[in-house]
Amino acid sequence: MRLLFVLFLIFTSPAYALAWTVTGTVTAVHDGDTFRIGQQSIRLWGINAAELDTPMGPVARDALKDMIIGKQVTCEIRGRSYRRLVALCHVGGDGDDIARLMVHAGKARDWRYFSHGYYAAGT
Figure 1: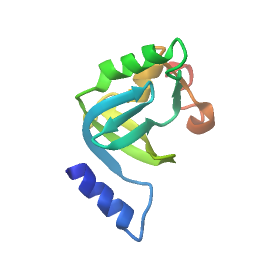
Figure 2 (figure 1 turned 180 degrees about the horizontal axis):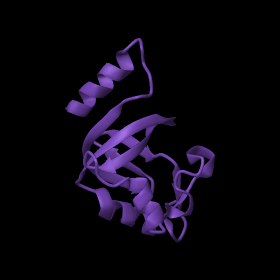
Figure 3 (figure 1 turned 135 degrees about the horizontal axis):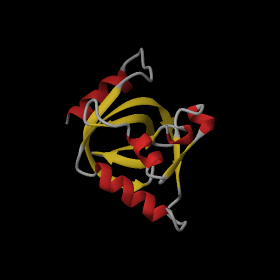
Figure 4 (figure 1 turned 90 degrees about the vertical axis):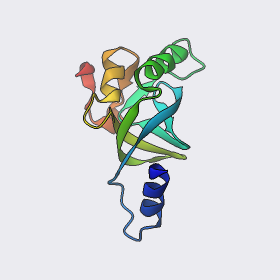
């Protein structure tokens, strides 16, 4: 409910800007870089994981699922892509950077075009 209220305020505000956070419990994981909080789809910023129709796709999805499904995450929204929010997300409020965990685990790569090297070499 809180998520819906926050999204309502953001998208109806005349001063709409991409500088807000979304916090909630992860209800589903689509692939290695996309998940849902309630009905909102969120794409992890700065990384790229294998697509589901490739051999490593299900492996990446399952790794992300193990990390975050059913857990509280906080996401700093950086933009939009298709019908998804693109965000830098952490487990809990100040926990681990989820994208960084995926890169460290070898399940995703830094997407330099967007991250400008933020996750380069698994740092």
